Image 1 (spheres, rainbow, N blue to C red):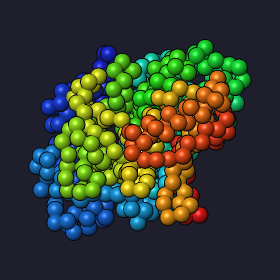
Image 2 (image 1 turned 180 degrees about the horizontal axis):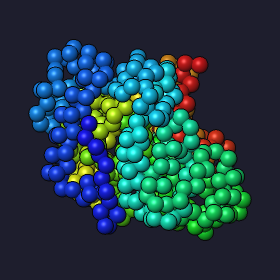
Image 3 (image 1 turned 90 degrees about the vertical axis):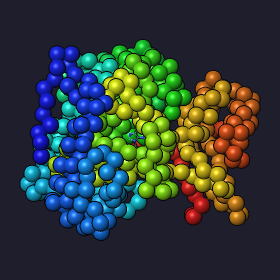
Length: 438
Ligand code: DLL
């Protein structure tokens, strides 16, 4: 495979970051042809899938031809558990990560030294794009371990020339002490965990706005524009998105500019994204149309992934801060997180958006689905804000109920609870409790 090492230009950017769309597509065409061939010849599962599908790497001539190739799914990784999809001899794999997933076997991913190097390089692009500067201290509260968040962000922060504080997730009291003592300029964690830390500070009479933190690089779970505004106000920061998934690399597949805050740019010299219709996978959608995000890795050595179905629902938009690389719209949710309530589809992010529009309600909420009789019922449990009276909370519940009826079309029960009553996030927050089959 071609080496992907590049040297940074004088402005500190990788040369590929400032390439034109045509240049990026030329790189993608060359690399897609190479990766299809590589996967077919090195991974028996790909050979079988391509053969069964009646397609051969030589059928790829231009980018549109990628649509002829079969998809890869989490199931493929599970069936070949643990190392069956590795394309290099086991000794060349220098790192393994795994994601537990909510059901079934873990999916295992591997990296060669070159893969780790590329990962750090792409992650560094994200942190820089979000405003993190050389010499800054970055408090990394993504979990370290098998999860790609901690170690992935760690290498990215170092590569960006910043000082990483490898705190990991949890131990919220200690997070607060370190933020005060080490005075980091930036923090990296999930959006809901930043909320948890800020909330814990306020309970101690500390003001998150007075900390040294100026930028937060947030990802690993869906979050809304309303949540961005909430966190920016709580901490007096720029809150930027970072996107990734273990199967494709980890954090750093895409990152957001602090200047434009208009969605994450996908590093298209290393990944070819597509949007497909989740209900008819043969339909590749045009830019701007929403659907399921699919990725082909163009350079990964240990675990090349061809047309991986992420289940993440979003759109592809033209690049802005990095014009040659397309952006992702906000992720509305995962197709497998969608709640179907009496025939109406809804995502937790839609509820987040509405909760944060109502005066007196906090972003701490959870959704419970039950089936007391024959009908499904949704209850939104949401904490009132500290300064919201119980009278105001009653009115707020009515407002939220109305908003959900108007915007989503579902009737639901609203239960406004006291501040601190709901379980706090320490990483990826579980919003939905489906109690129907209990
Ligand atoms: O969550 C990688 C990551 C770590 C990304 C830290 C950003 C920061 P997984 O555990 O494999 O990997 O989960 C991947 O998380 O398919 C999305 O559903 C969701 N996700 C990740 N980033 C975002 C984001 C990491 N910025 C799954 N916005 C993905 C919305 C996100 N959802």
